[in-house]
Image 1 (cartoon, helix red, strand yellow):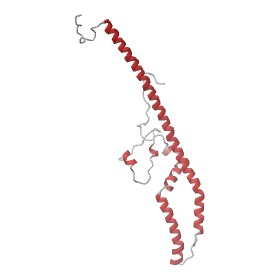
Image 2 (tube, one colour):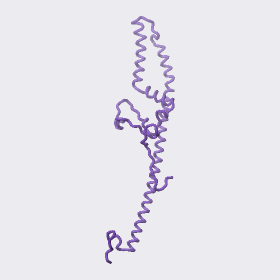
Image 3 (cartoon, helix red, strand yellow):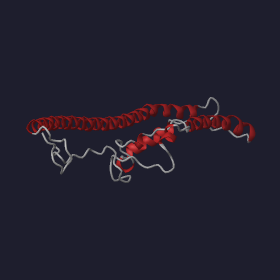
Image 4 (cartoon, helix red, strand yellow):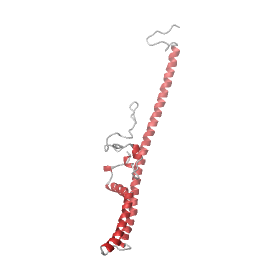
Amino acid sequence: MRSRGQYSPPRLLDASPVGESPWTVPEIDGVGWNDLTMSKTGWPTFWHLHPGVRKHEELSLGERSADRMRNIMGSWPFVFSFFGVMILWAAVNTYFLQRVIHHKAFDPYPYILLNLFLSMLAGVQAAALLIAAKRTDSIASEIALHTVKNTDDIRTLLDENTNLIKEVKIATDLLDEIHRHVAALSPHAGRFPPGGSPPPP
């Protein structure tokens, strides 16, 4: 409970350097927030800038790995690279080895070895998707908890502001009552400058 006369609102965003407080928004040199939100580099995510989300050394090895896997596998370069590897695989086995150097292909058509690799990849794809989903849920939970904390702080500030307004209203009513009593006792009170003499009755 805060004592009267010593109220200090909670700081929702600390201005201390990065790493000293879990509620710090890091500085980005030469980049404004409008530039970030209007970024044209694919699908940018800025959850790591949220003051309520853990980052860097606060994350476990598994969480950092999940973030890296999600960022790599959920990108266009990964998709194009994946298709490129399959096309290169087919071209090497169908054209280069058999027709250029007349060597036996290690995975001729219908590319059984490639199908085996794709099947194994499909087997772990569900687990990878679940790991990425769990990491996303963890980030959303941290943001939600931070929002709840901010909401509680704002509610506390509103309650204190309401109580302060009530106290000011009580003090104002008391001051008006004092003015009325003084005016009843001295009708000429307040009608002459400080240090002067009251006007004659």
